[in-house]
Length: 472
Ligand code: SAM
Ligand code: SF4
Image (tube, rainbow, N blue to C red; front, side, top):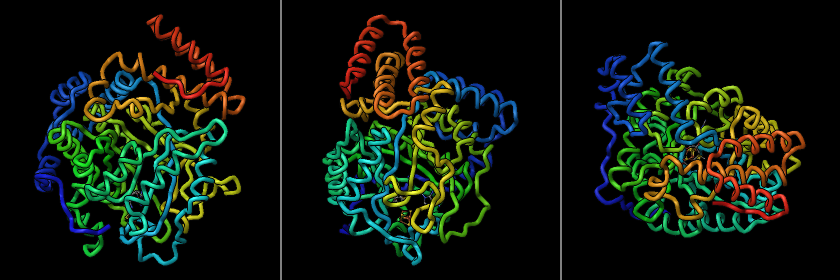
């Protein structure tokens, strides 16, 4: 696993702390400029780092409200009212790193360690399928046992599990950065997104949180992780920062820098951005200096939405149901639901309360998938399990082409409704089923093109008769 490190071609450390700090310090609050930038963003044009800094410095309540309103509008225009659902599946929590904020860090002897064996993976996937999940993200600590081959074998195992009418149609990965060879091996197993969070882009803070002698202590190896992934053929990448380690404004500008770097160098930006907030965890005692309050959290999500109109934003169950409800409207496209972090935690006999010695951190939203679905439907969102783009090869550069007006009406909304109806038929509670079909009817009545309505109705009927996995 730890061969000589080969970085991507022309790899540079593109995060210039001094430049970013100066942007935060020197950019003025300029209402006219902010409005001009909002207009550009509503035109669905990605913003530069400098433009994003103007949004960050817009602190007055009026301008902040304008940013919120623009983010709501952009979300509606680009993504419609769909929210894609997934679940994380922790495969193993052995770890050779010593990240200060994480309960899996190697020096924490009291953490209960475990790697799921094949049978346990199958059991967990069956349980997730029985809840109605179709999309998973597999999560790994960093350890020689979790080699690229191990990750790839686990992915193949997950795809092979079919239970009742259930199956997993997309497996994403959150694991340590690999070398080129490793990415190829994992890619061949059919993964969707490869997700790596830089945690903090601020060099000094990175050093403080990740001891230098550990594998993760190498800032550039991690920063370059998704560039190598791209070179090795993984064109579906997820970036992220762990908010609370350093100034949120610095992390937002760095995420945009990273996104633009990938876009310029490879012609493909990240597919998703994640913005986890630091959570309490077993054996963790963190400094609260940079913890992000709810108001700033809302601001940062809205600003990210405006800065990268076509990048998916992921909001996890680290947040409470209330925060998720609020923040979702500012441009979130994916959330996890029914989340359990304990290794083996999806089995029926497990309690909903967390046992922190066995888990990475405490979560804020412990509701079941059906409860979350129910609320989304009531709030007028279409919960979606769609995996169509990825399975039809609409990813990377091509995905960017498809992210155009009209595409949503023709493909995304119908696919969301088809996957929703599968859920309603197979897994929903009676109440969710009734509400869900009302939503489907209402959404169909909003589609203008008769041809699409007819095709959709025909497929919905086939799903009612027992067919599955129909998509456009
Ligand atoms: N070991 C891999 C790595 O470090 O890239 C996988 C990551 S870890 C299992 C998933 C993510 O959880 C980390 O990248 C980090 O951002 C986040 N995380 C760790 N500790 C956390 C905490 N206390 N609160 C919230 N998120 C945390
Ligand atoms: Fe290990 Fe990842 Fe936790 Fe760091 S964040 S200790 S690398 S599991």
